[in-house]
Image (cartoon, rainbow, N blue to C red; front, side, top):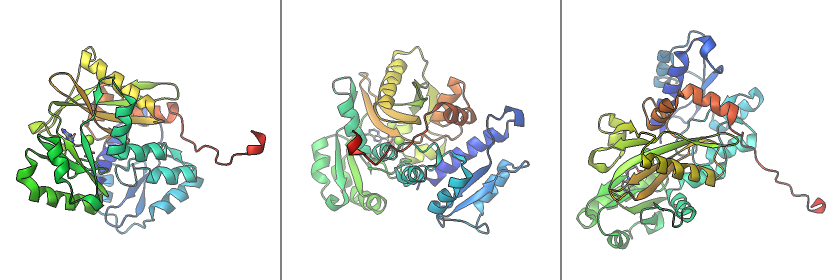
Length: 353
Ligand SMILES: Nc1ncnc2c1ncn2[C@@H]1O[C@H](COP(=O)(O)OP(=O)(O)O)[C@@H](O)[C@H]1O
Ligand SMILES: [Mg+2]
């Protein structure tokens, strides 16, 4: 589903890695693993000495003649290789606890993190509920949101009416702004909303009907070592029509991203909120939170990205750049400094307690 985002992250990391000479590289990348969107199989791309970004692009474009394996076997066969795996599978199964569960059960090394936290963050409704309870009375708002399970899909009208004003209809757990849409007036757009919900329910078991929050969009990432949570510089996203949907995200033209000066009070405030959120759950490695800020300075939580996109000049890349890190430095930093997630003991010896 979010294949394009994963490919952009991979391409940026590999081009940055290849641009360094051998001595500058903080680690040795051995293999790339490509999960095909056509047949769902994983194929290995060995990184040989003369490897170029064009080799990666042609492999991605046409890989059918190479032998592929199901994701489960590909992960399983990595157990004996013991490689450190950087998981760039955005979205379904890669970011929602699926791949994280497999990695935990197999004991793989890498950036997978805690499966429960991955699935909580991908569930926008559950995550917002967590955030609003964590920040009770501390100035972080969450938009009024109605959770619409598929079985109740025809019953959205009372929800939309109760919200008053423009509404956003979006999937509960698909990312990349897939199918997120703003409606100025729900009553005038009933047929369109019905059609959008039908599309959403093909891919997601629930949709959200949410109040539209006007204002500016900001995002703040954090990197997490074993001992501290470091908030990165805040990025402001200027989107056309105040709505950063799929068209804006992928056109590359409309949404402008700029770093907010670290001395700004708003930057400090968002960093403090991001740090508090990142510390409130067992996150590992990195995470990114998206906010909206209204004219009256209210801060609203929009969503949490468990695997932030690492595409060139994307929000996280800009934050890192301003912090003085490249995406290659980030991977090296995480591998050295972040606590590896390990599953807890599951057998309780009651007699010895
Ligand atoms: N309630 C809302 N009010 C205003 N804008 C919203 C709202 N929900 C979503 N958006 C816009 O749509 C974009 C995508 O929605 P988001 O919840 O972040 O999902 P995704 O996982 O697809 O990124 C946001 O970046 C924001 O610009
Ligand atoms: Mg988003």
